[in-house]
Length: 273
Image (tube, rainbow, N blue to C red; front, side):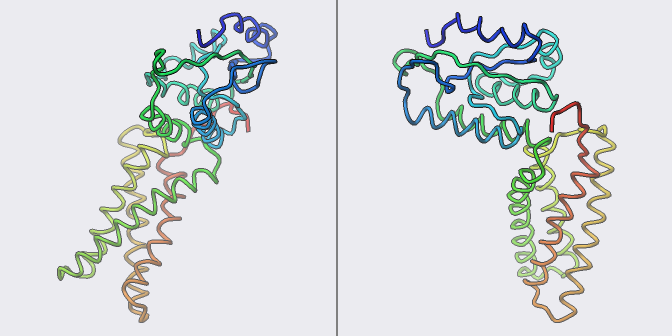
């Protein structure tokens, strides 16, 4: 067996003492003796744990561990929200614990890893899925610096789409106003879809109609700013490319602020800060 069932007895101590709402059995807190593990497998697990910690603001040493114990009340509150199968469960449940402000403890456990020949089922696809789940379930309540880093990549991709479509339309002879507006709407749609897929929680505060309304308000504000700023800079003699780039940069920060505050305002719980 990879795991030793007797370790559950040690893991139950913080729960029985009323200190913890959940206890993780860590393979990396190191009991007195241990079997040497595969280097790449260990690095992958530890890297996923670090990445998860950056988003959840927890200091866990082994997020992907199989051994997890919960108080009955805790798992009853969390279970209805669970969606993942396979190894996506680990980052998802960790994100829910962090979001709910539950008390998480760790306990060193024994671990005797299997090889692929012996039945090990995890592979690189599970690692990719775990990365997505960390962002999808943790990013909406992550510390602002982590959200900004993630939104930078979302915004950068959307901005590139904005610039490319703008220049392609201008090259095809489409009018300036039409090119500005169409490029903005297309990139805003891409930005929105990536936001609800990765960064913010869909319908986090509003219902569907309310979220769409808030999004339309955001589009109107930032679209007007994008159009006005691009036109004004071009009128001031600044080249089209430079003018559009400046407007896109301003739009990056404006879109993040409005999405966080207006479209996807996160309803915080008793989370520990």
